[in-house]
Image (cartoon, rainbow, N blue to C red):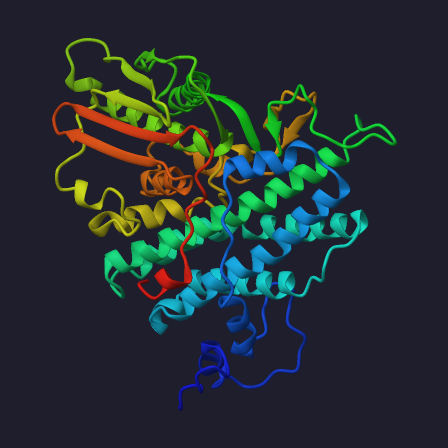
Length: 441
């Protein structure tokens, strides 16, 4: 079978050309196998335009109709551009990897979204924006299966690609996914603010001065409060998993307890929550080896001129030396079979604390309660013995997205120190992959 001519059709033409033609209308979740590559090429040639938290905040501070429409049209062009880059990444994978059912599922979801979003014309009115937000919201909901499907695809294909290449590909894909959700959810949130009841006729719409949120950006994110909230949730899950008789370690928080900075709260909650969850689990499971009660988990918050560092230290026995080389890998080597079985029990996850479950509500400080539809409940509410092998790798992706850092130092036989560094000024752009770096994947 001859290969498709470069620049004429996508790789799927070769994959599907041996199948009999069908004139039945494809079901809603299916995508047309015959796709001119030139359409994708046009969007791949465009560069994504990264933004910073400061830009998100400044733009949403004083909302006018023109600013709202400008935001809509920015998102309208960015989403298909960023999707096109990731689709091209997937097309460069070995064919046997792309045909994996999980990888193929993600590819088809992305192509369906790309085809839908690229066809949307310029948004010229508030009514156009309302329709656009509806389309974007539906797309976000459809993509809640992407993370578990990607993770299962990686584990099933671990012998078909070098682990380093696969991890680089998945990191790029996840970082791009975060970026799309950030700009999409920010615009949807700004639209909700613009339409909120406290706006008065003939008054220039602006963010409620009493609100600590501008869209999804939390202006005064307090590190201590985030740690305490994540601790409460992690300890509750541990109690449910290990039983009410289980003695959990205490937590000791020290340092610059008043350190605040602008951040997307759900991102920070996810990372801190995973780190605390790992520490609690390690200490509890090591306790039978101890002669006394569980040692406390110590959290140190350090505020510097340009960043905040959160160190989480436990005495849970550390990480085995043979595990350390795979700590940040999604493929996980010899432990992949167990993780694959566990992942099959997690149908959806969005990997942000803001989407815990449909009944979870977060007070925004502006008199409104935000409710987020389901997804992360299946990830963050999993029992401690349901090890997925993706908490730390995904946490690092989130930390690095806003130019932060996440490092782990282990002393086997004693414990672990985890260091999370956060840019506190909000002036660092989201860390995206450029077209130049795509060839390295």
